[in-house]
Image (cartoon, rainbow, N blue to C red):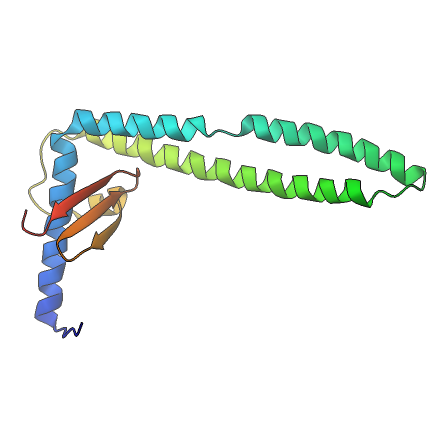
Length: 162
C-alpha cells in the first residue's frame, strides 16, 4: 500500500478518531448497566488470580531451605542444590510480587472507570481530551472498523461509518 499524507489528511484522521472515541464512550454510557457488569466480572477475574497464598508458601519454603542451608554449611556438606532452589524460589517470589502489583493497578483502573460511569448522566456531545486520557488505553485502526480499548480492559468496536 502507498500512502500520501498531508495536513488535511492528518486533520481528517484526527477528527475521525475523535468522533470514534466519543462514540465508544457514549456506547459505554448508554449501556451503563451492562458495562458495569463487565467491569465487575473483570474485577472478579483479577481477584481470582490472587497469589497471596503462593507468596506465603514460597516464604515458608524459603525459611525451611535457609535453615537446611545453614545445617549443611556447618557440616561441610554439599549445599549447592539447596542454594539453587533458594535462588529459584526468590525469582518466583519476585515474579508473583510483580503480578500482584499489576493486578492492584488494574483493580484501580477498573474502580476509576466504574466511579466515572456512575457519575456520568448524559452522553458526550464533543471530544474531551482529558476524559479520553483517563479512560482510553488505545485505539486500533482497521480497514473497516476501529477498536477502542478502555483502561479497564473492555473493548468497543466502532464501524467506520457509525
